[in-house]
Image (cartoon, rainbow, N blue to C red; front, top):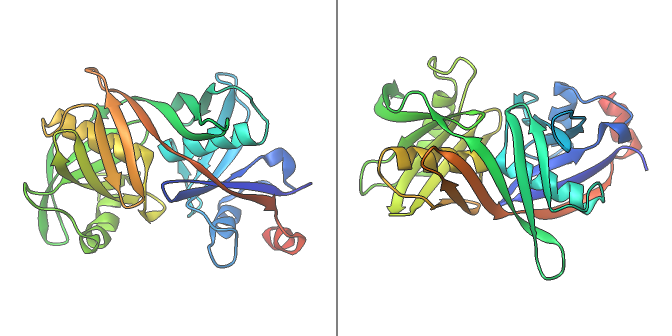
Length: 277
């Protein structure tokens, strides 16, 4: 069957997975936007495209729903690994995937029925630039921590005893994403400490906007909090979509673990494919 798609989600962060060898059209920014449209397309927070790799078992190209590219996605990588296993492209539970943000090792964690509903991802090394910086956004003085885990993040912690609201995210998220300090834009996390090993975050993703969950956002927020002495590893990071467990070594090598689920698989209608062309 031609023009097949597979869809999965990780804590409500959903992606379409496509193998270009099964498509009658190449993926382009315009076609990705059409596929991700939740009213006229299949709908999703992005597209995961299977590509060839000389450095890993599989290669992955990550598309944001606005048609731009992402270097890395913790939730997307778990979904991609589940896709590879579910479609018989691999029977291995340990594999390596090459992304634009580097090669990542993934371990699928099958349940008693043999179906992997959780996965562990070795995200890579976290770096900080800057550790702290003050900016003024929407008339508010903020202090953020810049973190890279293969893609750029801006983490802003709430004052002690306070938590962020969705209204805060909708005002600050898009402005921080496109702040002049980030010429290539960034992912934004509004974070609050909720315990010695716990955070909660609200997420504004580059190219996607408000998001229920994000694996690399959880990693960035956890590493920033550890660096600032707010929490200690391991850290449970809770987002609106659910919780992820982040472990960071003393050198800030980061591992992420969380749930992943299959949603649907099928084929694009011929009329929709014609419209894409």
